[in-house]
Length: 149
Image 1 (cartoon, rainbow, N blue to C red):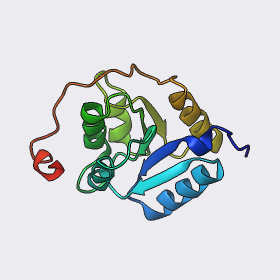
Image 2: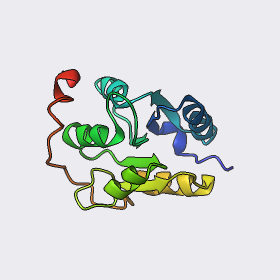
Image 3: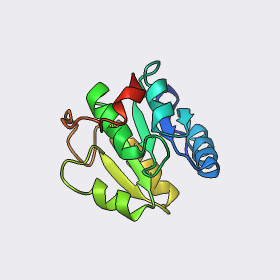
Image 4: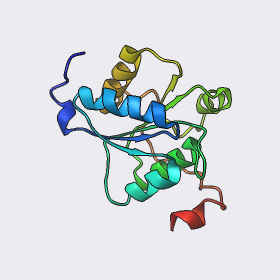
């Protein structure tokens, strides 16, 4: 692995409910020189986002309390230019993420190759998102909105 000299100035928010996967990705990204914050689900991530503005958010799809789709919608409303990378092995998540109107900038299926993840991160951070970085219109589901404050 080569250390990206610009990575140490880059803050990534990693949102993953599987502790083993979260720890593995945290270590990997930190070894690459990124500053990484983590959350167990979208609700915890949205609370962190009131205090920090990461350059990239990496999220799983299927999580308790607030899933990756709802988190991406939240980000599109509050931080519309922050790229969101969906990393999931969930077939429903992969299918939904590829439809038009998806709130994700890029999608990576699990399992993935390490070089694929790092390439996608670099592309997103350099403005090479898979889809346009434009504000997203749909509202969050009503049952989630009260929890966000």
